[in-house]
Image 1 (tube, rainbow, N blue to C red):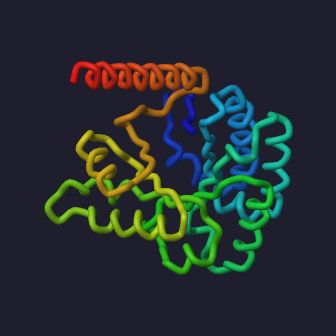
Image 2 (spheres, one colour):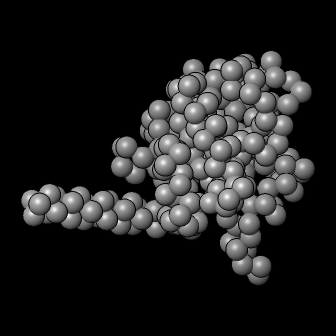
Image 3 (cartoon, helix red, strand yellow):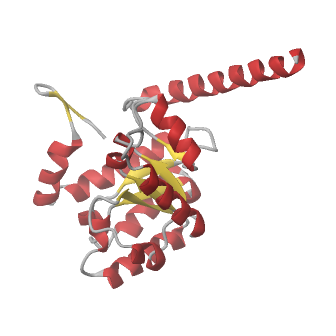
Length: 230
């Protein structure tokens, strides 16, 4: 999410989300984001999921499951296509409560991703105790993955661990083709970052999907012609 301010221009969520959390406004913002995103994503192709970040304040509000069900019902968006991204901060201190909330969310049918894995208080016990569907590898491990003493071995370990727990992995902050190639070699199943696209307003997302599918179709046609020529 980005805030297009009339005077300051584009404002990063890193600037206004902490303030919203401190003032309690994050619950209203989060509810609006969830409802709006589900409504917009209802027109997307059926094979594309929607990922929504959940603030620790939202997570512990006690009404998250109800608000998610309301947003899904109002938009007629399938629960199976909604993925909630939570950070390790929601698991600290009261993990029994966190576990109960996560099971409530899973009962709705949504997917749950552990965001920014490896940057906070990561514990392997989290992956055993909590019902995650995905691990999101933080950009700090992607930035230097190509270096001689880079983080390739760490990424490989996370990918292997996720696979053993039947989770998928998404690498964040992918900006170069070299990073993309290495991540594919390491078995990372999904990626996001400026290499693929900057953040887009909702009305431009469908255009992005169409462009991507066109490129895939063109690539498939080229490969087919090469096989015929061979």
